[in-house]
Amino acid sequence: YLLNILVGIIFSPNLFAQEQFNYDESKVPDLVLPDPFVSAKGEIIKTVDEWESIRRPELIRLFAENVYGGIPRDFDEIHFNVSTDSDHLYKEVAMKKNVTIRVTRNGKAQAIKLFVFLPLEGKGPHPVFLLISHRNVQALLDDKEDRFFPIAQIVEKGYAAAIFDVVDVSPDDKERFTNGILESLYPEELKNSGGMRGLAAWAWGAMRAMDYFESENAIDHKRAAIVGHSRGGKAALWAGANDKRWAVVISNESGCGGAALSRRRFGETVKRINTSFPYWFNDNFKAYNDNEDALPIDQHLLAACIAPRSIYIASAIEDQWADPKGEFLSLKLGSRVYSEIYGIKVDLPEIFENHQRTIHTKSVGYHLREGKHNLTLYDWERFMDFVEKEFLLAR
Ligand code: GTR
Image (cartoon, rainbow, N blue to C red; front, side, top):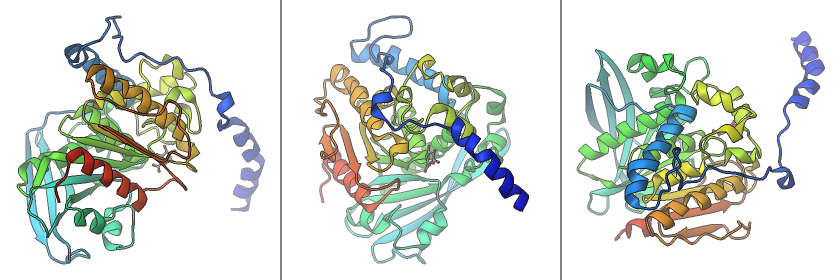
């Protein structure tokens, strides 16, 4: 033990010397970003048809090949086992359904537990928020004070609140991440350097929750919002970009590999995330370590792939690791597709200023919260305000 400490002391200065992260805006390189409106072959993209038939599918393919791996669409069967659970903390305001989603492919099966809280008040079908959770879901459901998933507040506004734990799909762990759909349903993905890894697997899980929403009469699946915080936010963006069934896509402090522009190299970098969390992204993404300019995409184009559906990006001032400015810029640049292709008047400020903390414009929302990296009630309240406007939710 002592020896370990000694070794740690001797080697740690070296370690710090290697790991330099930039928090100085004046050291951010000049950005030359891939143009949303020029295809890989050089075609100019002007119309909805050109965007939807050429550029958007091309971008999804580029993100799949170079960053996340694609989300497999094929399986043999999906089955929902639903039971009503009357023993829970929210019984005054919600009915709880425990859903086991069972998916089979090539004779193998995977089960995912989805927990759904339906408002007791008001008549359905209810719009729904799905949270992709990398925190222990049972612990969240057992703790009434936890703001990470404020069930009572969500349900009281007339929404259904649904959550699943990523551990059921692909454990959030370098050694065990294959211990889910990557072993059971899609083992061939691991042989492909551009195949699905952790984040894409979580996005796949969210899509199976959507399959359930489509089968549930109490839920209005056409008014569904997918939410993720941080690593979950990265997965939410990837799910939202791929699957048009999500009417609203919300990323909270998703940072590097999520909303933040990789080329800014501010806070967490591609190299660092590939080193700490190699199992989130595919192997091809490693080629961009210290080589962000070679990426055929940047993250503003992920926001663009969600257009014209609603997108909300949230940052926190003290979460500089996630590069709030880079998150805002992605949204700002990605939202050009909303305005220039879809003719939606998006009104974001040119430069983001700290005092301007919440922006809601048609289809696009943003806030910069005070404080640290976390998913808080404040964040959820902003999401609900945005979604309410987007859905013109009648109470
Ligand atoms: C950090 C990681 C971030 C972010 C965060 C989280 O350690 O560097 O990219 O995903 O974890 O998920 O809270």
